[in-house]
Image (cartoon, rainbow, N blue to C red; front, side, top):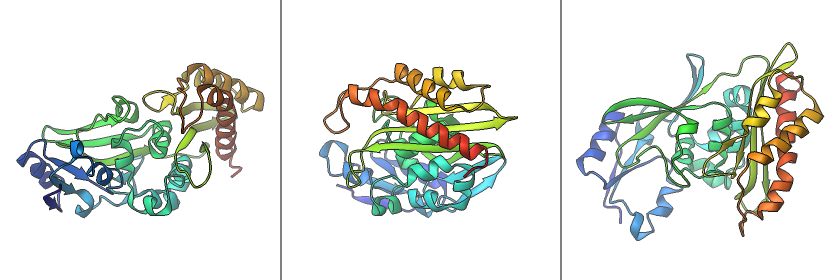
Length: 290
């Protein structure tokens, strides 16, 4: 069971508390995943270090060409923030799909990433938006792109017993950039996504640039549909082209049949539809239509 709980006021203090008892401490942000783990004898941590009392950890701000999120920004904050809706619409939509309202009020973007589940809504959208995580450790600070944050299902690049995410940085979306998130679920009462797709499109002189399409759970981490992205680069938005992109995305997806997420064959069949929807909405927003 947890025997010690700390509220450090600086990142350095948090790291020092983790170092005092190597392997026994864990960082906690919202706790919606971690506290469930604490009920498992094999996953219990006797020392919890809460980042939520460090100044700036719950802030969303513009800085140096990025939208910067503190590690303890909740899904509800991101969903409702005018800044996020302006510069990272897909993230606002994804965060609005996480769990229940109670979970969204407590769960954090950083926790969603460190849990390293491939279909986590925030993780999928942040990957599509080209986000970078700032990670503090006893050895210093490093920045990792979202594509480097996953070392397998449930395995994060961040060692929560010794280091922590302090910020998540998303490039600001300028004029002509739009993003969108599309998600399939069994019913509204079940928060588990069967399939999700995030897309980002920039229009320059009517042509698509910097196209990003990320799908999940289509492998051990959110997966870029690289062939589809290359197909669309430099092309004008077109429904037929988006349909072709969906077919190419299906070729790259690695689905497995699941009792709760649906069969491999079913999700392969519907993936092109969700790719097409996400791209169409992202392109419409890039054109200023929404």
